[in-house]
Amino acid sequence: MDFYNFQLLVCNGESCKDNESKKITRLLKQYIKRYNLNEEVEVIQTGCLGLCDLSPAIIVYPNGILYQKVKPEDVEELVKSHFIEDKPLQRLLYQPKENDGRIKNVENTTLYQNQKRIVLKNCGIIDPENIEEYIAMDGYKALYNSLQKKPLEIIEELKKSNLKGRGGGGFPTGLKWEFAYKNNSNQKYFICNADEGDPGAFMDRSVLEGDPHSILEAMTIGGYAIGANKGYVYIRAEYPLAIKRLNIAIDESKKYGLLGKNIFESGFDFDIEVRLGAGAFVCGEETALIKSIESKRGMPVTKPPFPANKGLFDKPTIINNVETLANIPQIILNGHEWFTKIGTKDSPGTKVFALGGKIKNTGLIEIPMGTKLRDVIYKIGGGIPNGKDFKAVQTGGPSGGCIPKEHIDIPIDYQNLIDLGSMMGSGGMIVMDEDTCMVDVARFFLDFTKDESCGKCSFCRIGTKRLLEILEKITQGRANLKDLKILEELSKQVKEGSLCGLGKTAPNPILSTLNYFMNEYKAHIEDKKCPAKSCSKLVTYKILEDKCQKCGMCTRNCNFDAIKGHIGELHSIDPELCTRCGMCIEVCPFDAIIKD
Image (cartoon, rainbow, N blue to C red; front, top):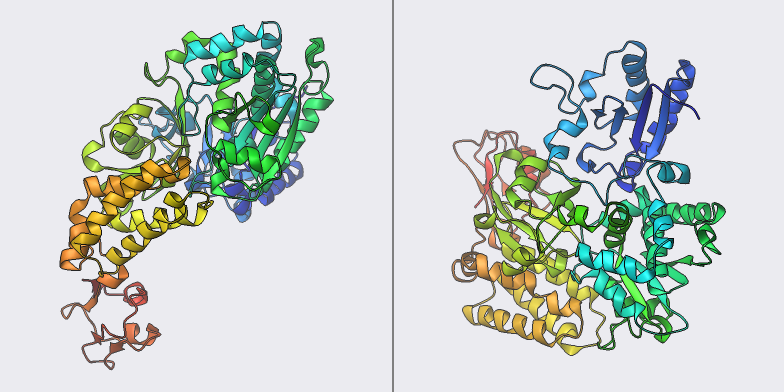
């Protein structure tokens, strides 16, 4: 085995790949070979490092130096400076100095210090296309240990861990497995739900891109525990890199005898097949997912019976999402006592979030349950850009709600979020600043859920459309207070009457914003004003006389001839012709144009 003085971990997740990380990896290997550093430096492609705002990112071990926003043209200079001249390339360093002047280790930054990695344990550390690197990190040891136990012992360990489903429902995983275990059937199935459809969510995708073997190992353990010999990974076709690495992992596992016939010579057989979804959000609901695998239209069915009793092809079926499964090998290896010491009593463990929106550090984070929202936003996320004030955060994606700034010190766990009118969901977390219109946020998410409704039940099919129409009237200044009352009443009816989770949770963005931001709704209706100056129909553009330099820049760049005035004259904007595109604000070098 080769040992190297340095290892270069290059993020090759989907977002980094879009920023030429593949080319950077290739150039690193090229220049390391050119400067005869092959025996000292190893280049490793990894999955997501979680540092999306800094991509493409490179971490140099053993000292843990982090380089950010590396470009192909930087590579030769980086190699020469760091490995030949022994001088880290300062201009690309992230948070370069400790208090004593030493270069900061990435693990000592606030970005990482406030995290706890269980699900993302191997992401950004190992090459996801090399099974030996996963094995070196105790990979498949949990599977081996499990096969030495009785199935019910594994289920009891999970029940004691109180691992809750990370896909949004929060149902105890061990209890779900027990239902299927107790069901006597000659055929059972185990499914991984990787149909991640929330806008802005990429947690499951990143795990499959960065650590696919952890999911295969967990599914095999689950198959043994419930008595299944066949598994499916249901993943949307929009995730080509995750699909590629998942298929590589399946092939490698079979080659090493860790998947297929007589695993670890235990007599247990288990095989896994990848099934691609077409991207329907409703197929994240387990019964709709099952119909899709059966080559039927992805539409939910009434429960009970639950899939653990009658699921895929009418056989007992367990469905867990990617994040839930990624916890299982670690629980088997370390025990339920270890797991329950992390997080809170009712919500043990960690939660992975895709942190985005109006935040300095966007990316993938994993925090212990019970972490305060303030710490996520200001310690891990780095705060709100451009000196703006924090206004709210949306958790749970389209199915969640908005949590206002007065609850910024809330500990994040399942029940606390529900009590505030939101939910954990699969893990999207969108931060909003003072310039965000909360009415428009509700409109955006309703527009999404309306399009994604399968149409089976009228409450969801028709109700979401009517809700969206009312929200559009409000954001356009055409609504009255009667519309506001109908909006609230209809939201409650859709929530109560819909068949599946999509419809039942679709009104959450409306109800939470009505609860916390009623003043904004009334301003849109009564004053015909958008307080955040975001809704274009309720905003006018104004030229400030004391700042206008009469240069004509705005006039030349207005495509609709809405700005009048010659060079040397004070300009004015015709509100009838103005389309509120914002181009004049962008091009004015004197900040003389504002929204009013």
